[in-house]
Every structure is written in structure tokens, then in C-alpha cells.
Image 1 (cartoon, rainbow, N blue to C red):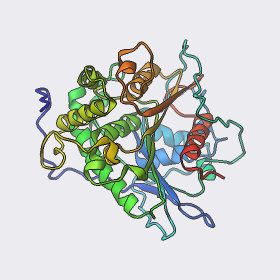
Image 2 (cartoon, rainbow, N blue to C red):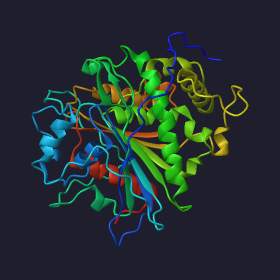
Image 3 (cartoon, rainbow, N blue to C red):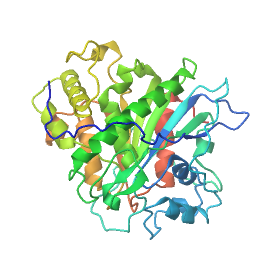
Length: 388
């Protein structure tokens, strides 16, 4: 049994605000829903505001990586959207019922602040040979044009006090103390991580239950949303709820980091087998977040070879080389721990053996760009083969 003396006592969830309904975008006829993409936001955004920015046309100002103004609140995103031709969405956009023909869902999680000022960086572009890149532009084209058969789901985190914003309440997946060092005050994130893992797992299971057998879910996020997605993966909560890993197409993270990475490294540092390393990490995360043990309450976890332990094996992590809010090296440290890459590094030597690919985008700060979104779609195509 793993004990964490620093874990705070969980407060009662009574009278706490619930998660607002997610914003959902459906395929445009005559296209039928085949898969789902779930995208997670950060503390200064909501699902609808993230959707407004992420679904903007590629030739709009919102996709300009040279924008000099940091976007740190939904109001700033709204200001940028005013020149993009994309109307801002209501924070409580209704959840639409899927049609009987829908078969796939994409979940995206938004991040904390959105644009960092330009900063010189010694990092160079590091495209993965496994990811096809397509950067040609088309006037008015957006991600929905590249994924015509995909349902896009943008959940919203609960409103909670956020230390980095002076205790102001924001819609966040968990608390953050300081941008410059994500390990400071890390224990305060535990309660939010737990609540969000449970909420997102139920949301994902609901979306899967609505799909035909061939439907896939891809889960991803930006900034804090990326961190949230990776903790969800490592928690094993989808397996605990009986979700078959075959329904999870993969995991995507942009400008993210891995919470409790140092502690996770200590958990796996003395284990030679990938199967055992994954078991230890899941046990640690579940104990940390005060999640119920698997099965009969013992320390045993579902068998890795049985197809019920891991939720998807493929991960694509993207990062801007000029990101000063979430440093590119934090993203690389996360990728090295998740994979067996990073030769000569402790994380690389004892990684979790996921197919974790990474790419750095030159000139990009804490935001996303057209090339990155197109790379995401090409990566998805490599998994499910459904792009036009």
C-alpha cells in the first residue's frame, strides 16, 4: 500500500457546483458521426470558449502564432475571436443529442493561459517520422473540415478557486499555485484531479455507450487539459469502469506537463518490466487521488495482456518552442517517462512503454497553430484511417 502523508483531506462535495454541460459539435450532413474527439480546456477558459478558438478557420487571427498579447482569460479569447469571424459561444451551450448514425467522439480539454510573449529558444523543430505533416492552408478551412465524421466534445471543468490567479474562481480541472514551477503547491491539485478524473471517466463511458462497436474515442487537451488527460490515462479509472481499451483510439496533449512526475519516477525507478511499472504507477495515482482500489480492494490490477488495463497505447504530444508558460522541456520530460525514449535519461530508461511521439513547433508560444492541428488530424488518420 502506498501512503502519501501530504495528501489533503477531501472535502464534502455537497453544495459544490456541478460541471456545466459540454459544448458538442456534430458532423454536418451528409457526413455521419463515426468517431468522437474529446478536448479539455484550462483554468481560464470553458469548453465553449475553447471550442470557439479551436474551431476557428485556419486563416483567422486566432491561429496567428505571432500574436503579441497573452491570452489569460475568456475575455481575451473573445477579443481575438472578434476579428476571426467565429462567434463566441455561450459558457453554458446546450448538449445536443447524438443522431443514431454517430459512431465516434473526440474529447478536447482547454488549458490555463493561452499565449506567451515571444522568447528566444535553442530548441529546434523535432518532427516525428511517424507523423505526416500537412501545413498547406485553405481559405476558411478548419478542423471540422479535416474530421468531417467526428463528433467534437468540449467539456468544462468545475468552477474552483485557482491559486495562481489570486484565489479567483475559474473553470479549472485542478488548482495550480505558480506558472514558473508546477511542483510548488502540487498537493493542492489532488482534490481537483480526483473530481475531474471521475467526471471525465463517466463522460467518456457515456459517449462510448452511444457509439456502434467500431466507434473510437480520442482524448486530448491543451495546457492544463493536456496534464489532466495524462493523469486520467495513468489513473486506470476507465478500466475500473469497465471501458475496453480497444474503444480508445489514442491520447493527445498540447503544451502540457505531467503532474507529480517526480513522484511517479520514484515509483517506477526500480522496476525492470513495463507491465510492473504501469501497475505501480496506476496504484500510486489511485492512492494519491483517493480512488477506490480495483476489484476486491487488493493491490492487484487488471492484467496488462488481458486488454483491460491500459486505455489506448498511442500518444501524440505537441509543444511550442517559445512557450514560457509551460516549458518545452516539461513536455519532453513527460514524453520520456511515458515512452521508452530519451536515451541516457532516468525517465527514458524506465519509461512506461507507450507509443508516445512528440513534436516541437518553432516560433510558437503557449498556443496552437494550423500545422499542429493538421499534424493532429494526420496522426488520427494513422490510427483510424478515416480522413478524406
